[in-house]
Image (tube, rainbow, N blue to C red; front, side, top):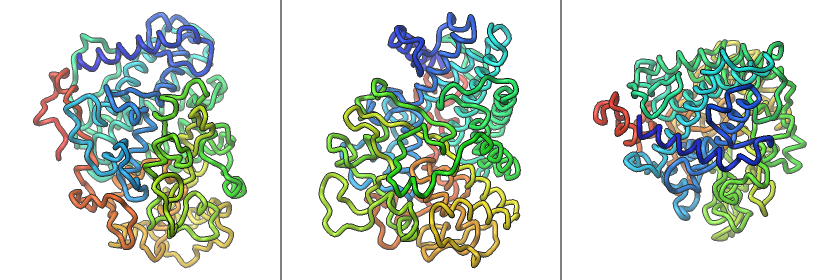
Length: 525
């Protein structure tokens, strides 16, 4: 643990030094320092810094172009599954995630195992310092509630993604599996490390934290949200819905998603999509939680940002020679008159070695400003809440309500949408053409269709691998006509508990935490 603390302190000192002349601007990348906790306004700059930390780079000691915080971890989780294709290896950025060759990097401090661990525990360390000041912090009660509510929500968020990334889903593997070390108090270089405990222990804290956040962020007691990057009552409920969905708590997931939808957001309309809407504007009405990226806050001149790895139309960026595509299987499930069909090319007769002229190339994620490398991140939006509602109602066997929700969403996507022939069922149909998920000939059950529309609507936004894990479906890339450049035959991806889906704990944690044993506490291979 001491090794980790040293790195966190370096990160905090660097952040303060880099932004001390801009403490009144939003967002700031300031994070840490006891002097910030004298009053709520100063402390708020710390949590704003944590939000910015979620997309800045250099969470490992190298490979910074693929180490841009939470955004890069979500992208890697999409590439680990079957719906997203990285067509060329390029310089290797993210391609090793795609081909399942990053787990062995656990012994160094450059790769995915270390950078992800370091990222989430950096957030936790700083949030714990904020929470420790809750009884002494001076300022308006509504501001204190807002600050503490956001801090509890960020701690729940961090442990939630640690649990998902470094262990199997609790819904499939069970709560007795080893969890991750839990720290709830401020830590220093002298802090003794703790053991892994169980997933049940981790989710007990996650559930308590998100509930504490929601109580404090309620509009009756918290100040109004200042900026789209701030978690508020509604986006905290959206996070709670994700957490409950992961645990298979269907009524709780439905209730939380319903609360999230009361925040004044709206569906992204079909006309917006057909008009060329790109997922780079956090100011849209459909966004519950997103990050505005100003031109002077772009990480790595845009090369260490998601759009540099996605937008093949930008010739000076990585994506132009390492194209990201939709799987041909998923593309074929999108009806011709579905407005989302234009998020991707179909098959192209004459492909080019660089640029967008590639079969199934994506256009959903594009730079807002290519010259500066800027583009906002959308972390949570209205449609995801509807899809979680529909899934929860289906799993509760309240099929009529699930149908109404899904039909409402699809009214903005496909004019002649008709699901009357689907079987009311809370089970997925087994189809070896694409693993035990939606059949290649189309949905059979209502749950098939809900999950299919989730895969289409949220492509690239939420990590597909987490859905594969929590549903216990497995997947295959070796379907008829597959356009995957890596079929990963060495990975048993049809195993509901495939060990390759669980990231290795970094060696640096074992080196600094005497409570962990590198042999008995390491995740299986």
